[in-house]
Length: 128
Image (tube, rainbow, N blue to C red; front, side, top):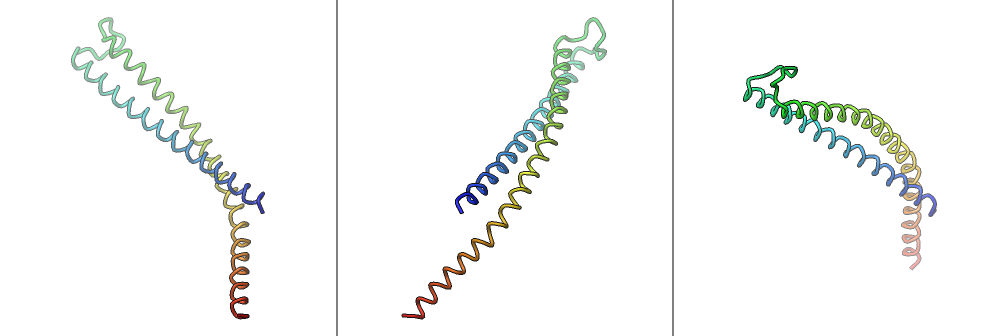
């Protein structure tokens, strides 16, 4: 009895932990994409301000160069996180599947036990 409850509680914890990990990764990816978009706007504004759009030009803005490097790094990190997200989603789905297998096995036993208790109470009430 206790081991079943412990197992079910452990499965729930694992599933919740995996779901939190997926949500965190999705949030990080959105943040990285937002930051990369903001940097892209800043690069365009800097290029318009200086009038030089060719990154290989000797007078190209150092701010625009460094912002472009940061943008590229953010996009690369977001792509790596997408791969981790896919793996985390598979792990979450597996954990949820294990939880669903453990939970239905628990529920009928609880319902049967509750029905038996209700039946016992009604029998004792009838005896009075």
